[in-house]
Image (cartoon, rainbow, N blue to C red; front, top):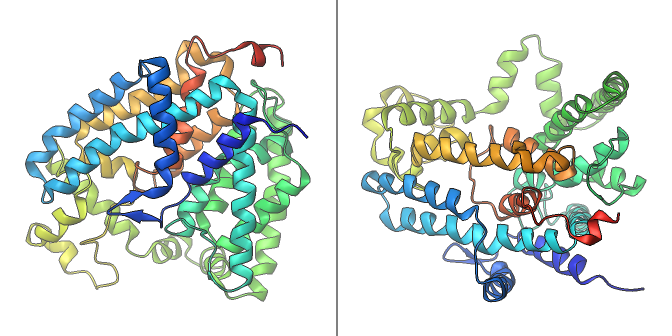
Length: 395
């Protein structure tokens, strides 16, 4: 059997961006292969992708926040990490997608399959109570799986792919169910729900796809109901507390814990600091300004938001990087998704994956995750005029 070079490289690099726990002074050692490959690309092409201007503009607009940071070293490191992520992660995956789009996706999807299997083994052996493999926590693992979930959902809904895309098999649906059970991640369930909704409302046969979505949602709800009755883990407790509660709103707030107060406080900080309080230094700011927010100081310890990161990426970005930086970030993403050069890519797995990732990050923080920048890189290939090489046009 012939081994495809692009697929192998994509598989390895996807695994490399999926490791949070192997690092030295905050640097992920598994990114070294991408650095080497990125340098090779720079030497060969002798140029950097034109989207670097958006990244540099974002970089410059984050700079004023350094005047207000409580951890200058950390903030400066975050600034240069932005450039690093773009050059050595996004540009690397863009280059792979341009060389062979189909095989790049095949490699990425294979890496997700392997990660789910490893996570299941760790869960069965009781090494991890909730599968997260080498991510910091299960919710990070869930977010990284978005392209894989979209691929499976698109197959279930018979979505026509605008670009050559690996086909999902029954095994993939089974692996998605395994991921839900082993991670016990509410985020992963939410990703499925949002994915079903967005894919159902796109393209032709909307009514049919909505009907299919409702059927699957009903089946999933019944499965959750019986699962919650027989089990007492995180998913079961969450389902019982929310969907079987007399007051769903109150149950949601209780399940969220201190998350609501973390979002609320970050929003207050963002409104009071136009230029931000220092990229990457939000927790340091809150710990040094407790007296400025007496309401949050009066909360019980388990609801207290001080010293904890903000929940929403966009509110966090406004609070730490400044409002102008947030506007540029969103404008760049809009260009990647909806500019006239990407019309042929609308409806692709990566197109939907980036949209769903952006929606999920409304309730999650940190835009420095390597797998998110890898997703950006593949999406950038859609907008490049040189994108459609002969190999893709002939598919």
